[in-house]
Length: 369
Ligand SMILES: Nc1ncnc2c1ncn2[C@@H]1O[C@H](COP(=O)(O)OP(=O)(O)OP(=O)(O)O)[C@@H](O)[C@H]1O
Ligand SMILES: [Mg+2]
Image (cartoon, rainbow, N blue to C red; front, side, top):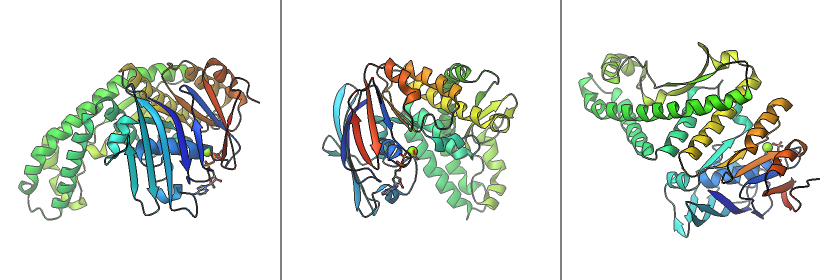
């Protein structure tokens, strides 16, 4: 998909504006605290209903204002769309796609897919499994939309099961739920596994372009010891589940683990190498969607140079310079210079300068400053 323009009002420090984007490359630059990430945040919210920086919706609304609104025109699956989104301080959200109300955020995610790589995510390997599981499921959902329904159904049963654990006298009291939960969990794991198998060679190909001295590989942990089946595990663990008050072996415990040799990558790789691993992972997800003829998500890269040395930054830029024409990219940076060769490579690039929340489109895209 490609977003043609975006109007922003009352979002963080951004002054009301309408931005006309390039279908290919958009660079947003300016000093610290100018409002660059806030623009990416607006784009992300359009596809997800929420920010990638905070779960607290009110934080995104400009101080002293009751709501922010976004309005965009974009092209998706060969047709043109209009999307409007308003988030109020009390949390209420109104979304209209081509004048019709959108009730489910998952509908938004299929129509307006967004992939983001921001410095916050450089912690992905050292944090708990939940962020990696979200990244994994984001990918599975986008290559197989039926995944969401399976996942929601199993989540409901799991919640119910955990509730029942509080009162159940014997395993027989919850067995009936497990009869539904097990096949759903297996179907979910199979989809996740297939996704990791498809993603792995693409990831390997990209990471080899970025770091040459260490090997890394992706591995799916399904949420329980893989050599055991849930049919055996759930009754076996019933007493312990009851004691701890939740189901210990479940798809909600799954993890996308990244190993270097027999060790977890986080225990072996340098911080910079970890950043490259995460970058390669995100790029691989994008590439898999491109290869499968899916809609291309818009790709948001926040603070592209800030956390990488020059050598690795150049490798990343070189990779971005070879993206397919239909891939729309948004990059924020403080310094434009390192991006000049990338800008030259694209015949359609747009530049936006941000200063104290005021966004200005720079007219001569091929000759910045
Ligand atoms: N709700 C809000 N209302 C008004 N201003 C806000 C709000 N939330 C954050 N800000 C301010 O908006 C400014 C822009 O923040 P943003 O993170 O977009 O800057 P940035 O250009 O990405 O900076 P950096 O280069 O440091 O990453 C900051 O000064 C921040 O304090
Ligand atoms: Mg920023």
